[in-house]
Image (cartoon, rainbow, N blue to C red; front, side):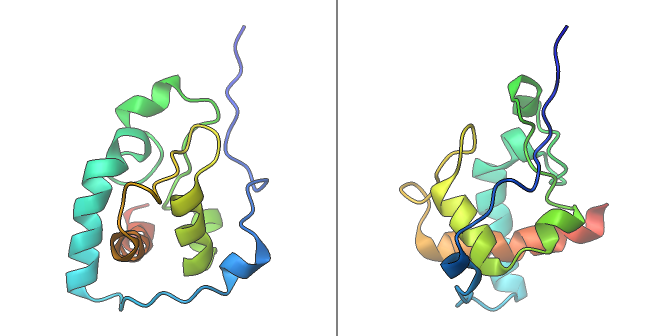
Length: 117
């Protein structure tokens, strides 16, 4: 018998992350750049619509976060940026691999996924 662990609210960014301000405007240019980064680095696990159902998610426990969820969307840009940067468990720490400005573009793109529920 196997059990699937779902991502829960246990992964909290530190308080100072909440205060980080996104220096990139959430405009079309940033969102388009973020979509490109998302496709390259995130789709395999989080899926093309961000629901945590990418092909790589089948082998992961806990399952990747659903970026369309209220739980994810309620986080500040700084919290999302911190999680993308630092990772946890099976979530890769993308800080060393994705440039800072691209990670902020990625946050802007993740914001657009709320409409794909």
